[in-house]
Image (cartoon, rainbow, N blue to C red; front, side):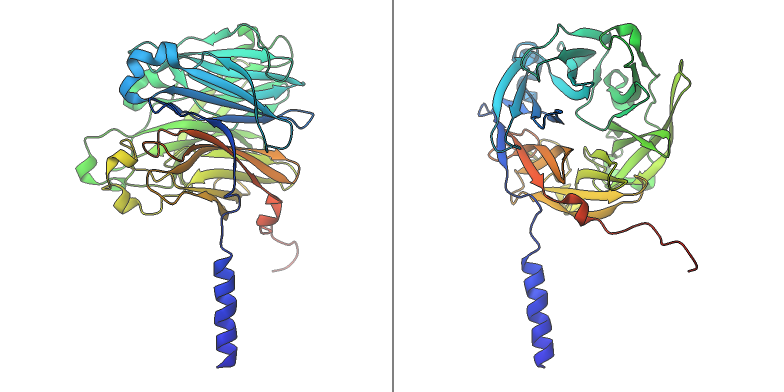
Length: 399
Protein backbone atom coordinates (compact mmCIF):
# COMPACT_ATOMS: atom_id res chain seq x y z
CA UNK A 1 0.00 0.00 0.00
CA UNK A 2 2.81 2.35 0.91
CA UNK A 3 4.46 1.66 -2.45
CA UNK A 4 1.22 2.49 -4.25
CA UNK A 5 0.92 5.80 -2.38
CA UNK A 6 4.50 6.69 -3.22
CA UNK A 7 3.88 5.84 -6.86
CA UNK A 8 0.76 8.03 -6.94
CA UNK A 9 2.66 10.91 -5.34
CA UNK A 10 5.43 10.54 -7.91
CA UNK A 11 2.94 10.51 -10.80
CA UNK A 12 1.21 13.55 -9.34
CA UNK A 13 4.52 15.40 -9.12
CA UNK A 14 5.37 14.54 -12.72
CA UNK A 15 1.97 15.65 -13.96
CA UNK A 16 2.19 18.92 -12.03
CA UNK A 17 5.42 19.71 -13.87
CA UNK A 18 3.80 19.28 -17.28
CA UNK A 19 4.09 22.95 -18.11
CA UNK A 20 4.77 24.63 -21.48
CA UNK A 21 8.39 24.95 -22.53
CA UNK A 22 8.29 28.73 -23.05
CA UNK A 23 5.05 30.10 -21.65
CA UNK A 24 6.75 33.29 -20.47
CA UNK A 25 7.36 35.77 -23.26
CA UNK A 26 8.58 39.26 -24.00
CA UNK A 27 6.66 41.67 -26.19
CA UNK A 28 8.19 42.32 -29.59
CA UNK A 29 5.35 44.53 -30.82
CA UNK A 30 1.91 45.55 -29.53
CA UNK A 31 -0.82 46.80 -31.82
CA UNK A 32 -3.59 48.43 -29.72
CA UNK A 33 -5.67 49.46 -32.76
CA UNK A 34 -8.57 46.99 -32.91
CA UNK A 35 -9.19 47.85 -36.55
CA UNK A 36 -5.83 46.34 -37.53
CA UNK A 37 -4.03 43.12 -36.57
CA UNK A 38 -0.58 41.54 -36.49
CA UNK A 39 0.05 39.29 -39.50
CA UNK A 40 2.59 36.46 -39.74
CA UNK A 41 5.92 37.71 -38.26
CA UNK A 42 9.47 36.76 -39.24
CA UNK A 43 12.73 36.40 -37.34
CA UNK A 44 16.43 36.12 -38.21
CA UNK A 45 19.66 35.98 -36.23
CA UNK A 46 22.46 38.19 -37.51
CA UNK A 47 26.08 37.03 -37.48
CA UNK A 48 26.79 39.02 -34.30
CA UNK A 49 23.90 37.40 -32.44
CA UNK A 50 21.44 40.28 -32.88
CA UNK A 51 17.87 39.16 -33.44
CA UNK A 52 15.83 41.04 -36.06
CA UNK A 53 12.04 40.73 -36.07
CA UNK A 54 9.72 41.59 -38.96
CA UNK A 55 6.13 42.30 -37.90
CA UNK A 56 3.45 43.16 -40.50
CA UNK A 57 0.34 44.96 -39.22
CA UNK A 58 -2.64 45.17 -41.59
CA UNK A 59 -6.32 46.24 -41.56
CA UNK A 60 -8.82 43.70 -40.29
CA UNK A 61 -11.12 42.08 -42.81
CA UNK A 62 -14.01 44.49 -42.21
CA UNK A 63 -11.90 47.46 -43.36
CA UNK A 64 -9.32 45.74 -45.51
CA UNK A 65 -10.46 46.73 -48.99
CA UNK A 66 -10.73 50.42 -48.18
CA UNK A 67 -7.64 50.79 -46.00
CA UNK A 68 -5.22 48.12 -47.17
CA UNK A 69 -3.15 50.34 -49.47
CA UNK A 70 -2.63 53.10 -46.91
CA UNK A 71 -2.66 51.27 -43.57
CA UNK A 72 -0.48 48.19 -44.15
CA UNK A 73 2.87 48.54 -42.38
CA UNK A 74 5.74 46.15 -41.75
CA UNK A 75 7.68 47.00 -38.60
CA UNK A 76 11.37 46.07 -38.29
CA UNK A 77 12.72 45.65 -34.75
CA UNK A 78 15.94 44.35 -33.19
CA UNK A 79 17.09 42.88 -29.91
CA UNK A 80 20.69 43.02 -28.68
CA UNK A 81 19.97 41.16 -25.43
CA UNK A 82 18.70 37.76 -26.68
CA UNK A 83 15.08 38.85 -27.01
CA UNK A 84 14.59 40.47 -23.60
CA UNK A 85 13.94 43.92 -25.07
CA UNK A 86 13.18 45.18 -28.57
CA UNK A 87 13.92 48.46 -30.34
CA UNK A 88 12.19 49.81 -33.44
CA UNK A 89 14.40 50.16 -36.52
CA UNK A 90 12.19 50.95 -39.50
CA UNK A 91 8.62 50.95 -40.84
CA UNK A 92 8.06 49.76 -44.40
CA UNK A 93 4.86 50.05 -46.48
CA UNK A 94 4.32 46.33 -47.13
CA UNK A 95 1.47 43.92 -46.46
CA UNK A 96 3.84 41.10 -45.58
CA UNK A 97 7.59 40.56 -45.48
CA UNK A 98 10.00 37.70 -44.86
CA UNK A 99 13.66 38.20 -43.78
CA UNK A 100 16.71 36.09 -44.65
CA UNK A 101 20.50 36.39 -44.52
CA UNK A 102 23.23 36.02 -47.14
CA UNK A 103 26.92 36.84 -46.70
CA UNK A 104 26.28 39.16 -43.78
CA UNK A 105 23.56 41.19 -45.50
CA UNK A 106 19.91 41.14 -44.50
CA UNK A 107 17.36 40.62 -47.26
CA UNK A 108 13.60 40.91 -47.31
CA UNK A 109 11.02 39.28 -49.53
CA UNK A 110 7.99 41.57 -49.47
CA UNK A 111 4.49 41.89 -50.88
CA UNK A 112 2.79 45.19 -51.63
CA UNK A 113 -0.73 45.74 -50.30
CA UNK A 114 -3.10 45.02 -53.14
CA UNK A 115 -6.07 46.92 -54.59
CA UNK A 116 -9.61 46.05 -53.50
CA UNK A 117 -9.68 42.97 -55.73
CA UNK A 118 -6.45 41.46 -54.35
CA UNK A 119 -5.23 41.31 -50.76
CA UNK A 120 -1.60 41.77 -51.79
CA UNK A 121 0.45 41.68 -54.95
CA UNK A 122 3.89 41.22 -56.49
CA UNK A 123 7.00 39.65 -54.96
CA UNK A 124 9.63 42.26 -54.10
CA UNK A 125 13.15 42.08 -52.69
CA UNK A 126 15.11 44.58 -50.58
CA UNK A 127 18.53 44.58 -48.91
CA UNK A 128 19.88 46.12 -45.71
CA UNK A 129 23.59 46.39 -45.00
CA UNK A 130 23.18 47.79 -41.49
CA UNK A 131 21.04 45.16 -39.80
CA UNK A 132 17.64 46.52 -40.81
CA UNK A 133 17.96 50.25 -40.09
CA UNK A 134 17.99 51.34 -43.74
CA UNK A 135 16.90 49.52 -46.87
CA UNK A 136 17.50 49.62 -50.59
CA UNK A 137 14.70 50.57 -52.94
CA UNK A 138 12.44 47.55 -53.51
CA UNK A 139 12.98 45.56 -56.71
CA UNK A 140 10.07 43.69 -58.28
CA UNK A 141 10.99 40.06 -58.92
CA UNK A 142 7.60 38.79 -60.10
CA UNK A 143 4.29 40.51 -60.71
CA UNK A 144 1.17 38.74 -59.55
CA UNK A 145 -1.06 37.98 -56.60
CA UNK A 146 1.56 36.30 -54.38
CA UNK A 147 1.87 35.79 -50.63
CA UNK A 148 3.55 33.81 -47.91
CA UNK A 149 4.71 34.36 -44.34
CA UNK A 150 8.07 33.30 -42.85
CA UNK A 151 8.33 29.60 -43.69
CA UNK A 152 11.29 27.32 -44.38
CA UNK A 153 13.84 28.13 -47.10
CA UNK A 154 16.77 26.19 -48.48
CA UNK A 155 20.11 27.85 -49.25
CA UNK A 156 22.75 25.72 -50.98
CA UNK A 157 25.37 26.09 -53.72
CA UNK A 158 24.74 29.85 -54.08
CA UNK A 159 21.04 29.18 -54.57
CA UNK A 160 18.06 30.00 -52.42
CA UNK A 161 14.72 28.23 -52.72
CA UNK A 162 11.45 29.41 -51.23
CA UNK A 163 7.80 28.91 -52.14
CA UNK A 164 4.93 31.37 -52.40
CA UNK A 165 1.18 31.00 -52.82
CA UNK A 166 -0.38 32.13 -56.06
CA UNK A 167 -3.63 33.63 -54.76
CA UNK A 168 -4.84 34.42 -58.28
CA UNK A 169 -6.00 30.81 -58.52
CA UNK A 170 -8.71 31.43 -55.93
CA UNK A 171 -9.88 28.27 -54.18
CA UNK A 172 -7.47 26.27 -56.33
CA UNK A 173 -4.52 28.43 -55.34
CA UNK A 174 -1.24 26.66 -55.05
CA UNK A 175 2.45 27.08 -54.43
CA UNK A 176 5.10 28.26 -56.85
CA UNK A 177 8.77 27.53 -56.24
CA UNK A 178 11.09 30.54 -56.34
CA UNK A 179 14.83 30.14 -56.98
CA UNK A 180 17.49 32.83 -56.70
CA UNK A 181 21.10 32.85 -57.91
CA UNK A 182 23.13 34.30 -55.03
CA UNK A 183 26.51 34.21 -56.78
CA UNK A 184 26.09 37.67 -58.34
CA UNK A 185 23.80 40.65 -57.88
CA UNK A 186 21.00 39.32 -55.70
CA UNK A 187 18.84 42.36 -56.47
CA UNK A 188 18.93 41.70 -60.21
CA UNK A 189 15.56 40.24 -61.31
CA UNK A 190 17.45 38.19 -63.92
CA UNK A 191 18.94 36.17 -61.05
CA UNK A 192 15.50 34.82 -60.16
CA UNK A 193 13.22 32.13 -61.57
CA UNK A 194 9.75 30.89 -60.66
CA UNK A 195 7.93 27.64 -61.36
CA UNK A 196 4.42 27.17 -62.67
CA UNK A 197 1.77 26.98 -59.93
CA UNK A 198 0.45 23.65 -58.74
CA UNK A 199 -3.30 23.74 -58.31
CA UNK A 200 -4.86 22.09 -55.29
CA UNK A 201 -5.77 18.53 -56.30
CA UNK A 202 -8.82 18.35 -54.03
CA UNK A 203 -9.42 16.16 -51.03
CA UNK A 204 -11.27 12.81 -50.95
CA UNK A 205 -14.83 13.23 -49.77
CA UNK A 206 -14.10 10.90 -46.87
CA UNK A 207 -11.85 13.61 -45.41
CA UNK A 208 -14.60 16.19 -44.82
CA UNK A 209 -18.04 16.45 -43.32
CA UNK A 210 -20.71 16.42 -46.02
CA UNK A 211 -22.43 19.48 -44.54
CA UNK A 212 -19.34 21.51 -45.52
CA UNK A 213 -19.16 20.12 -49.08
CA UNK A 214 -19.98 23.51 -50.63
CA UNK A 215 -17.01 25.19 -48.98
CA UNK A 216 -13.59 25.42 -50.56
CA UNK A 217 -10.47 23.58 -49.54
CA UNK A 218 -6.92 24.55 -50.40
CA UNK A 219 -3.29 24.47 -49.46
CA UNK A 220 -1.13 27.45 -48.53
CA UNK A 221 1.92 28.71 -46.59
CA UNK A 222 4.44 26.27 -48.11
CA UNK A 223 7.79 25.30 -46.53
CA UNK A 224 10.78 24.36 -48.70
CA UNK A 225 13.09 21.75 -47.18
CA UNK A 226 15.97 19.54 -48.34
CA UNK A 227 15.81 15.83 -47.54
CA UNK A 228 18.80 13.71 -48.52
CA UNK A 229 19.78 16.21 -51.19
CA UNK A 230 16.30 16.48 -52.69
CA UNK A 231 14.03 19.52 -52.53
CA UNK A 232 10.58 19.06 -51.10
CA UNK A 233 7.69 21.38 -50.27
CA UNK A 234 5.40 20.80 -47.29
CA UNK A 235 2.25 22.86 -47.34
CA UNK A 236 -0.62 23.59 -44.99
CA UNK A 237 -3.89 21.92 -45.99
CA UNK A 238 -7.30 23.35 -45.16
CA UNK A 239 -9.98 20.79 -45.92
CA UNK A 240 -13.63 21.91 -46.03
CA UNK A 241 -13.79 23.92 -42.83
CA UNK A 242 -10.87 21.83 -41.55
CA UNK A 243 -12.93 18.77 -40.68
CA UNK A 244 -9.74 16.73 -41.08
CA UNK A 245 -6.79 18.23 -39.26
CA UNK A 246 -3.10 17.31 -38.93
CA UNK A 247 -2.59 16.79 -42.66
CA UNK A 248 -0.11 18.48 -45.00
CA UNK A 249 0.54 18.31 -48.71
CA UNK A 250 3.86 16.99 -49.99
CA UNK A 251 5.23 18.31 -53.27
CA UNK A 252 8.50 17.29 -54.89
CA UNK A 253 10.68 19.93 -56.53
CA UNK A 254 13.40 19.67 -59.15
CA UNK A 255 15.77 22.23 -60.65
CA UNK A 256 17.97 21.47 -63.67
CA UNK A 257 19.50 24.93 -63.59
CA UNK A 258 17.04 26.32 -66.11
CA UNK A 259 13.64 24.87 -65.35
CA UNK A 260 11.96 24.61 -61.98
CA UNK A 261 9.37 21.90 -61.56
CA UNK A 262 6.99 21.35 -58.69
CA UNK A 263 4.42 18.55 -58.48
CA UNK A 264 1.98 17.29 -55.89
CA UNK A 265 3.04 13.90 -54.55
CA UNK A 266 0.66 12.98 -51.73
CA UNK A 267 -0.98 13.99 -48.49
CA UNK A 268 0.90 13.15 -45.32
CA UNK A 269 0.28 13.34 -41.60
CA UNK A 270 1.59 16.55 -40.04
CA UNK A 271 0.87 17.65 -36.47
CA UNK A 272 -1.03 20.91 -36.84
CA UNK A 273 -0.88 20.75 -40.63
CA UNK A 274 -4.29 22.40 -40.90
CA UNK A 275 -2.75 25.73 -39.81
CA UNK A 276 0.52 27.46 -40.61
CA UNK A 277 3.54 25.43 -39.52
CA UNK A 278 7.24 26.18 -39.89
CA UNK A 279 9.98 23.59 -40.43
CA UNK A 280 13.59 24.15 -39.39
CA UNK A 281 16.66 21.98 -40.12
CA UNK A 282 19.21 21.73 -37.33
CA UNK A 283 22.64 20.62 -38.53
CA UNK A 284 23.87 19.77 -35.02
CA UNK A 285 21.12 17.30 -34.16
CA UNK A 286 20.59 16.24 -37.79
CA UNK A 287 16.88 16.64 -37.16
CA UNK A 288 14.02 18.67 -38.55
CA UNK A 289 12.12 20.72 -35.99
CA UNK A 290 8.66 22.18 -36.52
CA UNK A 291 6.37 24.62 -34.76
CA UNK A 292 2.63 24.21 -35.28
CA UNK A 293 -0.76 24.51 -33.61
CA UNK A 294 -2.46 21.35 -32.40
CA UNK A 295 -6.27 21.50 -32.35
CA UNK A 296 -7.50 20.53 -28.91
CA UNK A 297 -10.98 19.43 -29.97
CA UNK A 298 -11.57 19.69 -33.70
CA UNK A 299 -15.07 18.19 -33.49
CA UNK A 300 -16.37 20.84 -31.10
CA UNK A 301 -14.43 23.86 -32.32
CA UNK A 302 -16.26 23.54 -35.63
CA UNK A 303 -19.44 24.56 -33.86
CA UNK A 304 -18.24 27.11 -31.29
CA UNK A 305 -19.01 30.80 -31.53
CA UNK A 306 -17.25 31.84 -34.70
CA UNK A 307 -16.41 35.32 -33.35
CA UNK A 308 -13.57 33.62 -31.51
CA UNK A 309 -12.08 32.26 -34.72
CA UNK A 310 -13.11 34.86 -37.33
CA UNK A 311 -14.53 32.13 -39.57
CA UNK A 312 -11.65 29.71 -39.01
CA UNK A 313 -12.38 26.38 -37.31
CA UNK A 314 -8.76 25.89 -36.39
CA UNK A 315 -7.80 26.02 -32.71
CA UNK A 316 -4.73 28.26 -32.39
CA UNK A 317 -4.32 28.14 -28.60
CA UNK A 318 -1.64 25.46 -28.31
CA UNK A 319 1.72 26.10 -29.95
CA UNK A 320 3.66 22.83 -30.18
CA UNK A 321 7.18 21.70 -31.03
CA UNK A 322 7.94 18.46 -32.90
CA UNK A 323 11.05 16.83 -34.39
CA UNK A 324 11.70 14.36 -37.18
CA UNK A 325 14.39 12.53 -39.12
CA UNK A 326 12.67 12.89 -42.50
CA UNK A 327 10.11 15.69 -42.05
CA UNK A 328 7.36 13.14 -42.67
CA UNK A 329 7.19 11.25 -39.36
CA UNK A 330 7.07 13.54 -36.34
CA UNK A 331 7.71 13.08 -32.61
CA UNK A 332 6.39 15.49 -29.95
CA UNK A 333 8.94 17.58 -28.06
CA UNK A 334 6.40 19.53 -26.02
CA UNK A 335 4.05 22.47 -25.86
CA UNK A 336 5.80 25.81 -26.34
CA UNK A 337 2.97 28.01 -25.08
CA UNK A 338 -0.73 27.62 -24.33
CA UNK A 339 -3.52 30.21 -24.32
CA UNK A 340 -6.38 29.56 -21.87
CA UNK A 341 -9.25 31.30 -23.72
CA UNK A 342 -10.85 30.56 -27.08
CA UNK A 343 -10.27 34.16 -28.14
CA UNK A 344 -6.53 33.86 -27.46
CA UNK A 345 -3.73 32.22 -29.42
CA UNK A 346 -0.02 31.69 -30.02
CA UNK A 347 0.28 31.02 -33.76
CA UNK A 348 2.22 31.59 -36.97
CA UNK A 349 5.47 30.93 -35.14
CA UNK A 350 8.91 31.27 -36.70
CA UNK A 351 11.79 29.51 -34.88
CA UNK A 352 15.49 30.23 -35.38
CA UNK A 353 18.45 28.50 -33.77
CA UNK A 354 20.24 30.67 -31.21
CA UNK A 355 23.09 28.59 -29.77
CA UNK A 356 21.53 25.76 -27.73
CA UNK A 357 18.11 27.42 -27.76
CA UNK A 358 15.23 27.97 -30.11
CA UNK A 359 14.31 31.65 -30.40
CA UNK A 360 10.69 31.90 -31.51
CA UNK A 361 8.48 34.77 -32.61
CA UNK A 362 4.70 34.35 -32.56
CA UNK A 363 1.65 36.14 -33.79
CA UNK A 364 -0.37 36.20 -30.57
CA UNK A 365 -3.90 37.14 -29.59
CA UNK A 366 -3.88 38.28 -25.96
CA UNK A 367 -6.63 40.90 -25.74
CA UNK A 368 -7.66 40.72 -29.38
CA UNK A 369 -11.19 40.36 -30.80
CA UNK A 370 -10.53 36.73 -31.77
CA UNK A 371 -7.82 34.09 -32.25
CA UNK A 372 -7.00 35.21 -35.78
CA UNK A 373 -6.76 39.01 -35.49
CA UNK A 374 -3.74 39.14 -33.18
CA UNK A 375 -2.73 42.20 -31.18
CA UNK A 376 0.83 41.14 -30.29
CA UNK A 377 4.02 39.70 -31.65
CA UNK A 378 5.61 37.79 -28.77
CA UNK A 379 9.06 36.26 -28.27
CA UNK A 380 9.62 32.88 -26.65
CA UNK A 381 12.81 30.94 -25.89
CA UNK A 382 12.97 27.15 -25.66
CA UNK A 383 16.21 26.40 -23.83
CA UNK A 384 18.41 23.40 -24.66
CA UNK A 385 15.88 22.29 -27.27
CA UNK A 386 18.02 19.42 -28.56
CA UNK A 387 17.72 17.66 -25.19
CA UNK A 388 13.99 17.32 -25.85
CA UNK A 389 14.60 14.78 -28.62
CA UNK A 390 15.01 11.05 -28.20
CA UNK A 391 17.69 9.20 -30.15
CA UNK A 392 15.74 8.09 -33.22
CA UNK A 393 18.61 6.43 -35.06
CA UNK A 394 18.93 2.66 -34.75
CA UNK A 395 22.10 1.12 -33.44
CA UNK A 396 24.24 -0.84 -35.90
CA UNK A 397 24.74 -4.56 -35.56
CA UNK A 398 22.48 -7.55 -35.11
CA UNK A 399 18.98 -6.98 -33.85
